[in-house]
Image 1 (tube, rainbow, N blue to C red):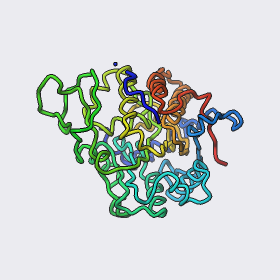
Image 2: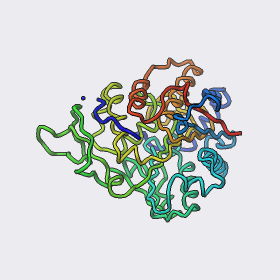
Image 3: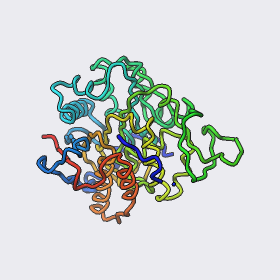
Amino acid sequence: MSRNAQFFSQWTPLRLPWFLHLTALLLAGGLLPAAAEPPAVPASTVAPATINSRVVIAQDNAATHELVPDAGVIQGMVDHAITNLTDAKSLNAAWLNLVTTQDTVGIKVFSQPGAYAGTRPAVVTAVVKDLLAAGLPPQHIIVWDKRLIDLRLAGYLELAGKYGIRILGATEAGWDASTNYESSVLGTPRWGDLEFGETGDHIGRRSYVTKILTHEVTKIINIAPLMHHNQAGVSGCLYSLATGSVDNTFRFERSPEVMARSLPEIYALGIVGDRVVLSIVDALICQYEGEQRGLLHYSALLNELRFSRDPVALDALSLKEIETQRQLAGERAPKLGAELLDNAALLELGLADLRRIPVFRLP
């Protein structure tokens, strides 16, 4: 994939009894609207140049029970979707179409919102089990995010004990002083950042890449929730991977314009975006308001998982879904995120035009 490098000169974990209680009230009151149908493109209209932007959607109303994921149903959805996305004859062949048994696969999650609002462990578990079945050694599978504490609170450390895989936080793994993203946007390095406590003219202008990517991972599977973000529009594939891969990221949160310019550039770093072989949107629940806090009363139950090699296409569909669900709920739909997606498309990270994205719903 070509790059234009010069293109631009706590929430606490949700307590289950309260969660289920409110769920019952919302379902009874009809406050969880039905899923909006993403635009579909007939196969005959799909140009060869857009084939890698194909989105495969698996949907099953039994995927959650009182908003708790059903592991067996989730596994079936993942297996069905990945074989269709890769056109493989078997499940193992589908995964080996994306990775090899010699790869170290980093499964990037977005765990800060917790197990019920961020990337759900049941979805990650299904991917882990498939990779193991395809022959990847457990130590070659890493589930990672920005901070280890978020992974622990979301329940991911249990996967390490059960399957022998590794769980890593980017901050705890450290930042590589030799690999960074530099911009004119000045930040104040915080505790955990490589330049924290240092002084000088250039301090705060660089964001250093995690050693997970420079020393460990050879391929990335990015799994993001369908979740609103105040600046980026959606806490999706681009936002999750870009902000999780580097330090000194608070400087990008100051405005939608800064985020729209910086996040695609970070994702476009060869050591980041070029290693992504698959993006998945955990769309079991769409949270259309509230950013990184789990807010059930701003959520819609979709029971979907969305798969693509194109992160921009997935984020474009997620942004449209959030706007649709806000409208169904009688909320104003702010026009945020479009500039970020357009910039990502200009950097050739994927398609942002919904009319050109081929969407296939599995039967």
